Length: 448
Image 1 (cartoon, rainbow, N blue to C red):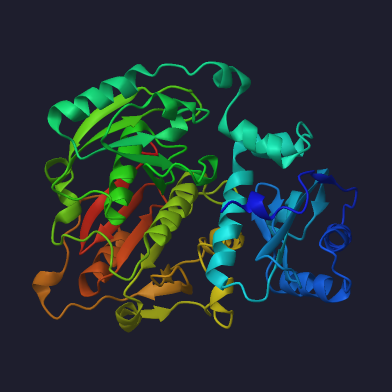
Image 2 (image 1 turned 120 degrees about the vertical axis):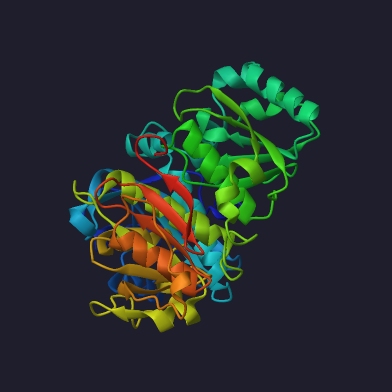
């Protein structure tokens, strides 16, 4: 179910308030009136209380404030904007141009709230959507969805995609298990209509919200690929498809990729996973710890690639994310600084919640690692990794060029069942370790 199903109004509300509390008050009052909620004060009090605990600003001019409210459905949503920007008390004085306010039924589980928030953030972070709302090009959510799915030209005529036809034929000829399509190479999703194959189709995208729920014949994987090269797309796509058990190491797959924004597929390749990605399986058949949810790996890998590309405030940043097997990991760590996440509810420090993204990026400049459990809850930051090895033969041998950050990351994955994702401060390269071995590298030159 899409967030669109919970909208109280299809109209994007224009507001003049430039101050945060005033803007929240205006939108909350309008929502209460629409939802026929008589008692306004408890709702706005809950919104402000949540904002005091943690800002709802999720980046790119978007804020998603929430409150528990007496509503019949699980959620009620309204979208508002201020093109000049609202002073939102966000990091680096960033302003909010888009407010997506969410009322929540008291019986809704936290996992569903995080899932909805992530869907909203992903949708409005799309560059075309974000720009259209901020610049007042579009006034309704319906029109936004139409723009995200197709243009007038593609609605009239579906363009033929030669590489898709070639991939289908190739998949039949070599008896490939699946076709992996990196959909962000195209500006819309009309290309799906030209696919003619009985093979398994796996759509890799940075924005799942572009795809409707009725695409039941396709598997969707959200991946940080919008700024990656074709080779980088293949690496990430295969890794995440494997982590979701959509394919296995014995399979051969056909991959179609292209540069985001070019509106064309430019690369077709055949991947024999066991032969060409054998480094994935150096010591194990499983890429990810059994307790790590695939969506958590997708999210953290996305954050890592963004930090590797962008750094922080113009400076390169190096950090480590350690995922899974948290009980064992805790035996090999100590805090370098006071843990900034200690004392917060689990729901307020989950990497799947877009509201946590800016906080993670801010703390990525702190020495040490982020320790994250399999459900995505951040256990600690600024954490020193101190792996211990009962047998000298267990100490991993690293390739030249790797420093102490990579050595500690490789080590923690030897003495535990965790996976570690490392960002190099000097190069921005993202490296993934499992069982002491490198399973994936993405560099600015050939991956990012």
